[in-house]
Image 1: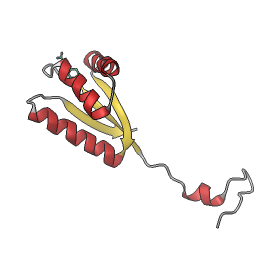
Image 2 (image 1 turned 90 degrees about the horizontal axis):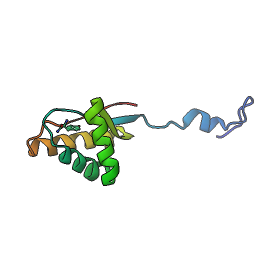
Image 3 (image 1 turned 180 degrees about the vertical axis):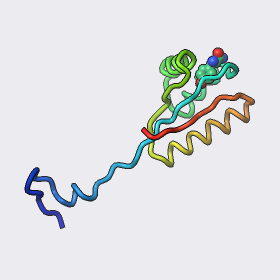
Image 4 (image 1 turned 30 degrees about the vertical axis):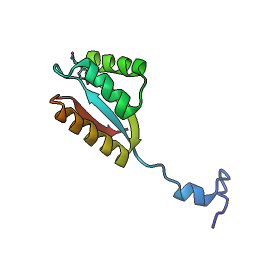
Length: 102
Ligand code: TYC
């Protein structure tokens, strides 16, 4: 049953039960071999970025070594990492997609 908390007026039910799911950053790592065009295509097709945004993120990864593609709940992040790494291997590129707790 929902009852008011004396200090802040919050419903006890909300205070005790609503939990946001843990989120994970999905990132791409730089390497010396994957073509820039391929990385841009991955960012557009798997992370739904415009060509302009994808190019900006690709160049950030190229210069800084790593960049964030998106932030997702665990199951979506895991699927993105698997799909991108499988696609990269099918195309004989060493591109690495990884995830870490946000
Ligand atoms: N460094 C690569 C090159 O010069 C381009 C690249 C960018 C590779 C981002 C991976 O995640 C990456 N062709």
